[in-house]
Length: 352
Image 1 (cartoon, one colour):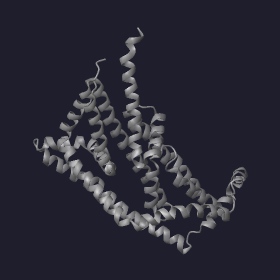
Image 2 (tube, one colour):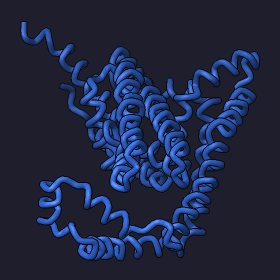
Image 3 (cartoon, one colour):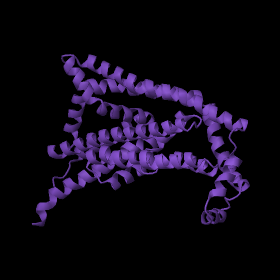
Image 4 (cartoon, helix red, strand yellow):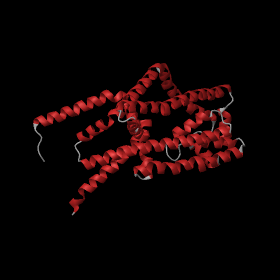
């Protein structure tokens, strides 16, 4: 291999330092930049269609696409968030007024559990309400300290959220208008052969589209179906539980069941057999079927990854990176598989 000169080494060191410095500067708004990139990839076909309809006027097409995102994504989320806060406040008031008693719920649940499960809980000292309250109080005291700090700084966090939202929308405009030129420049800067870059970039965009669209569609479907069932059963704050099921459905296989499962058990323990059995059957056969059928089709089929890789990368990504991880995890997994496939195909001739 050709040895690098001193000037080349110094330049590469300088390149690495300024790249790290630039990333450090952007780190506080990495989430806004990341979701701006994700939305730009998702709505790129819409932008291209508007660009053709506007006869090549890129600025107009970018502004129209941005307005469409605000109407389709941001405004509905804002309205849902406002309704969610109202319903959450109603649930808190029910607990305070005694309409919902934790002690009554706990005693009824314990009365219908099988003996082997009661014995197992007894080993962890969780079969009495007093011991459970002590453990919950210990955990709640730690959580309350964090919540108190957040509440004191609520103005600062609101300002940061609005700032991130504005940055995301501002970045989106330029990603739409100048995205093609920026993408070509990045591809040209990466020191890989053209076929490698083409395959890796294609995998990157395909996985982001499939993961976001697939997971969001599954979340909307499971949340809507669960919320409809809760509304039919006259459970308070159905929108709150629907949003919670939609959020938890990002965890494949068991997400939404963490909400409807305990409610079904509560119905069965209080003698509402038909409601409990109906909700359990509905959860397994309808809500669960959405996850088991749609997610592999929408996510695994487009990404060409096995279902277990999608599952593990999604859970691992969310465990490390929070909400961003449900996209970043599968993307890293897809690039991992694509990179090793390229490496294997490039070294096959060495075995001859």
